Length: 206
Image (cartoon, rainbow, N blue to C red; front, side, top):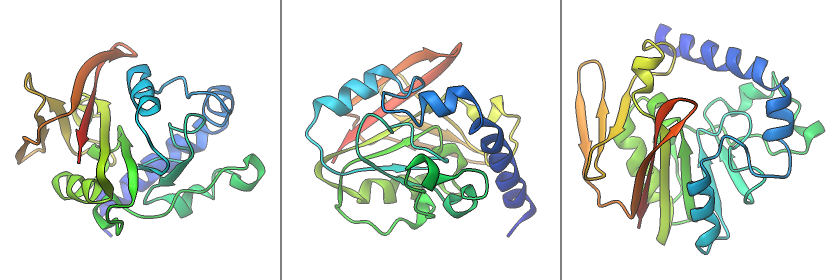
């Protein structure tokens, strides 16, 4: 494990260790209603399409989809989150401890979702391929997050990619020394303002 990866793990655990103690998390995320931070347009879209199985990748301690759908959370730090949060007490499922690039699901979920976590992956293009692979034919991949999160976070921790959408709905992924443009035709995409910053959502139909 590299020093950068260790720093990323410390950075994430430190954030969640504080966040899980707040009313914002315990009432807004753990509760039965829609998570306040979940983009309303995305929430409306999820509710509008037929679905039985939903996978949330890079979920953190608690999926942002909790309270909206019955969701399977997945996060590479899933086992470590048990050190900072009592899942049994709060009747939540701990995330499956799997990185996006190692997902072994094929055509299993009606919706696969990742929120503000694609920039955490080691290989975002590979992660997207595995995310889409997990979607059933006719299902949807939903990717959302802040524009250029790596720059905003000063390239600290797991934040090693700037991600944005161009005017045509193509995803643009920038590392310090690389650039990738994903030109898959989007079913739906948009840019909205969230907490004073640009936030994108990008929806692909398989």
